[in-house]
Structure formats: structure tokens, C-alpha cells
Length: 114
Image (cartoon, rainbow, N blue to C red; front, side, top):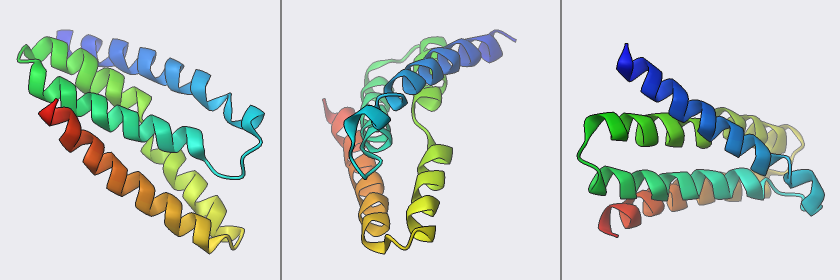
């Protein structure tokens, strides 16, 4: 039960913070989901750092699984990717897809090595 609470607490904080950042997207007047991209890349980087540095299972559940899981967003990424696809913005769709996955993986790898 304790693990459940740790993950839930971390996820709540991560999701709240993600929402606060996501609200800024409309203010940017950029026709590209840059906020979600940055959230996912920074979350992957942070998860890499946490995975390499934290050896306490409970803290890793709170911060890694919980916070990073709640902060990053696969669902929003797919929704935005689909919107670009259905709006026939295939170039932006492809760039968003590549940037998210390439820099997400690189972010995690860099985080592991920091």
C-alpha cells in the first residue's frame, strides 16, 4: 500500500506541474506543441538522472515512477500528433514524432551519465 501512495503522490505533483506548463502553450502563439515536447524531453532526462543516482526503491517510486510518470505525457503527445496528422500538417507531425523520441531517448541516456 505504501508503494501505491508514493507513486500516487509523485504522479499528482507531476501532473499538476505539467498542467501548469501546458497552460502556457496558448500564450506562446507557436503553431507547434513545444511545451509537451519540452516536458517529455526534460522528464526523460530527469528520469535518467534519478535512475542512475537514487538507489532507494521508495524514493525512486515517488520521484521516478510517480513524478516523472505524471509529469511526462504519452497521451497528450499522441493527441497532438494525431491533430497534426488530421490537419494534414504531415511535416510538423513527422518532426514532432522524431524530436520527441530521439531527444527523449537521448535525454534519458544523458541523464544516466550525469
